[in-house]
Image 1 (cartoon, rainbow over the protein chains, first blue to last red):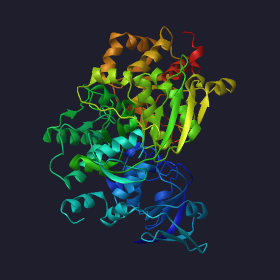
Image 2: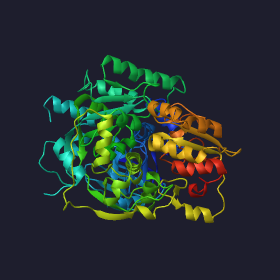
Image 3: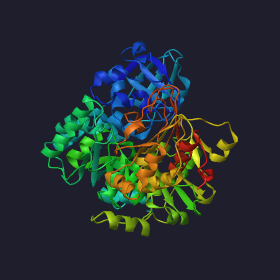
Length: 166
Length: 423
């Protein structure tokens, strides 16, 4: 699995209340949620974002509420991947569970700037900064999570396991 | 091999003799809970995996966030989980007017007890760690999986040990303790970890203090917060629950990433300023600075809407009037607390003082309803988050505090010291 796109960069502690404010949580329609993604800290986000673009952020990305609406909104808006110094744990779980690509890589998260062109190879955990001509190695996922990602999320993983395919 | 308290609970629920930090396990679940925001979204995902819940006594649905329903979409969402609960014959469907806010009602009705492995599709599910259970917040796909299979994957956490010493001073409570701790370690200070509370100081903390402390473990990034089981816990569980519980103790030589000593007697009223729960300021610092005038006060939520919280607020508000420039929302967390407020005369104190006394709901905590704020407004709130836009406009400011600070501030019209409130 690979991704390539332009970077939109954010700071530390981007919380789920700004990724998708609670006032929009009376719906779980993915497209509707996506149309409000990041509105409270970056009102131009949905206009600027091109499909495949990559978000890069600091520490504790996705902190706060357990709302799965947050990774779903970003995924549906067209974000191909989030690279951060660290992720809040529920956001981390939710992303993997719905097959949304995230990578923890402090070096890349610090070094990559807004507007950089970045290419990501998820299987190898390699992040290439095409603008700066640099390469970073993200932490690989444990085997269990790789299996789940390959199954395209938790639901398929559970069903395949029940059918004895895993 | 030695284990932390959390690790022992997880090992037992995974059918393993021992586990260590970082290990991925699949554990059996004792309680699986969702609300009116996360529950409806889980239903179509659940249906991809199963026709029936794994155990009708162990799946709990609580419409509490946008209830009483604030608009038609919310009403549809509540309807979806109500119908699902009937279809699946769930034992615990927590209807409005009969129950209350999820993290207050589950302990109160004895649905959660010590030694259990609990997930909830709400980040503050970590509250039940106060009872000596492993309890953590998860998302929608996780909860749907839990509902269908009764199992879930976990990465075994490492832990930070908090050794509590001494006793709290008057007008200082669990909220000040947890705001102090988050201020010290930061909003990602316990990321992916357990926060295990131990030490002689534990005995001086009430159950409500412990619920408040564990409730906000997530605000330090923690996977769970947990207290050892003692006489206070046992007494609470015997009063509220008929379930069989199991007590776990951390091994004496268990490994911790860090050991932090907290002298409870040195903690003073503490306020987290916008826009992070870790942005803690002591009342001493606040008293020395320019007054922070406020427009609203919220007393309630899964963090501080319990009976002892409302008693403390009422004690300060008794015979006083809320400042002309301030509106106050008092929201008991459950129906039982609500009626107890009436019986004890707290409701009258609040209403006479000029507070709105509301039906149990998460209400304004996450900007849903019952006290959403306009641009530039400031609020002292006993809730758990002060993120940008959390309670309404992105330019509204939320100051997190204890019920004591909230009540004193309601009278003063600015963030005020409860120790000087004259009671």
